[in-house]
Amino acid sequence: MDEILRAGGEAIRRKVLGDDYVDRAVGTSDAFSRPFQDLLNEYCWGTVWTDEGLDLKSRSLLNLGMLAALGRMHEFAIHFRGAIRNGLTDEELRAALVQIAVYCGIPAGVEVFRVARSVRDEMAQQGER
Image (tube, rainbow, N blue to C red; front, side, top):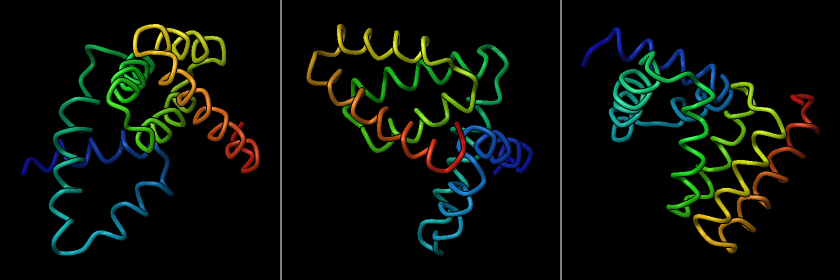
């Protein structure tokens, strides 16, 4: 394991998803699942998200499209919150969700707008918006 990539990945993961989310994910891992958390931090967040070829807003937009196309709504919600944290505006997010609806189908669009509303409401209740 590359400790520099792992540590850098965990730092960017915390920036995008928040300390509470990462603390929960890492804190609830056990001897069986902890190596997977390390892999996520090193490979997914360290190798990919710290690469300077794309900014965080662009990475968030890509993730939203891919997760919607795959129907991974739990992960979509996590990354929708991250997209807001990465500075995407309501107008940018709305445009992305409409494009998802056109390219992935209206049922996917209905679902992503439903998830987005839920995340936005939760963030407002928590004072994050």
